Length: 529
Image (tube, rainbow, N blue to C red; front, top):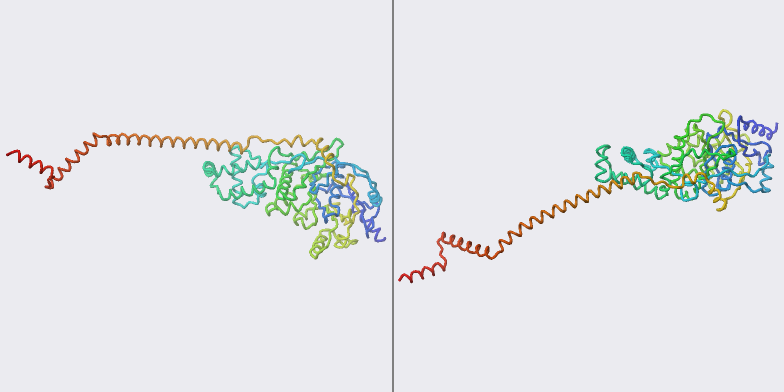
């Protein structure tokens, strides 16, 4: 048996599965496509997650598009992150082209144009159904991890959540949380919280508030609030049974990495908490395609990474598959990379010594092959070609295959504003989620409470001022009566007479006689004679 025939037989054996699967292309050997040697991905193991990696411009987005539309045809809905803005074309049929026909002739099956049912979503300023979550839904642990708080600060956040629950103060958005923090730093708030929960550090509270402001500056105030997005809506299908492709438009997320990682962690946590255990399924309930995955991991603290790793390991039991899209497998932490069963590796380019080391390391993530020098072929892959390995029978990796990928059935281009507008008009989610709800929550309740307290304090201050004024007026009245008596002419005259007589008496006692008394004595003597 020739080397070519041995390889063909290995591919046919390794990629034959029980149950449904997706055809992604034809295996290649020595740069030649082996027509009819179809490489498939079994739906049964897609909840074991996957990776699409490769340098810019090598076809990662088109691979994502292929998988999402093929899953839609199988009735599997998905959520895809459209960071570069070029995934909207999945909504409409593709345009025939001679190169597409040539490619599919080599693969061994025809090409049929077709679009997928689409819903546009947003967590920022883009158009689409708005995704929101309340602060309460995050809970104190996850909220603290997002803010990268230390143990002391996490304790304060836990107190804020507990106090809010006990006092029936709904924490819906960030201004609610900030208002509770600010209230607990006032005299009235400190008295309440210290009596029930212990001392409240104003220094740590100030640090937490600054970190919340940092999150707000990345647009988190648009994400926190009501109505909360119900993750069950991601499981929707159209009338024909096709899975809805939910396109999250995050073209401005590069400048807001903390918001993106916040959203992803909350979404995964919400799905894990909401979806029931599914066990082994013939196909996943939902697939999540996380483009530019390094943005999730680069901004994550150690505590946040621990949380992500746990969710990635456990969420597959809910029938949910994750597909990470990034440039190099080394962008994904080892603990997460080890959980990824499907790997699609597009070309990597070696421009520097560092690049060559990265390629050698990336090659070690794939099964050994008797037919490929993996580190060498990674640098030689053409556009629309990839190394593929999946999980096959009994969870074992399938043989590594150099694959000529099929073309997407949908348009490989961006929709016009009018086409996007037409899809938005038909949205079932926009009427449900795009009217914000601002019901009474912690902010309004505490603002009213502080206003009442301020009014009471102002009233007491006025009463105190009036009391002081009355006392001062009374003292002034008493003093004025005394002054009038003292200053009167009669009083002054009596005072002078009394003073004079007293003085005379004192001088007399001392044996001193005044001149007037001597003159008076002389007059009396002269009158005697």
